[in-house]
Length: 167
Image 1 (cartoon, rainbow, N blue to C red):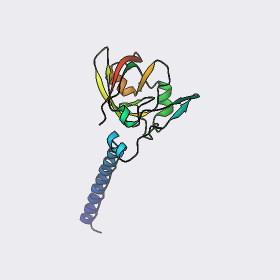
Image 2: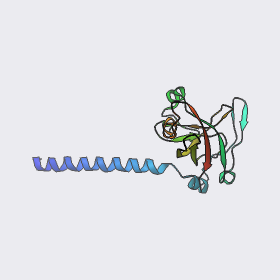
Image 3: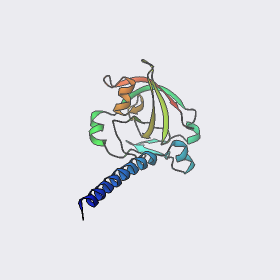
C-alpha cells in the first residue's frame, strides 16, 4: 500500500471515530425522557416506597402539575458524593454532582422544578430524578452544582420555593 492510500485510510478512520463519538453524545442527550414524554410512554415513577420504616406515597403526575412548596433545601453532602457519584438515582439516571439535579420525597420521577433561593432570589430549573431528603425539616435535596448556582453551597441550606414547571 502506498503512502497516499495509507494517509487516506488513516484520515477516514479518524473521521469515523469523530462521527461515532458525536453519535454517542447525541444518544446520551436524548436518553433522558422529559416528564411529559415519560408520562406519555408510561415511564413515570410514583409508586410508594419505604425508607427507615416510613412509607412515602408520591403524587400522581396530575397532582404535581401545579405543585408549589416553600421550605428548607440542602445539597447532597460529601458522604453522598463519595458514595453515589456515578451511581444510579431512584429514577435510574446516573448521579452527577456537577450537573443540576434534585431529590424530592413526593414528586413523581422525573419532574422539572424551578427552585428559588428566597434570600438571594437566584433561581434554577432542575430535574428531580431521585428520592430524599429524609431529614424532617428539608423539602428538597439539590446536587452540589445546583446549590452553588443558588448560592448556598458553603452554608449548606437555604429557604427555597419549589414550583413544578412540567407540562
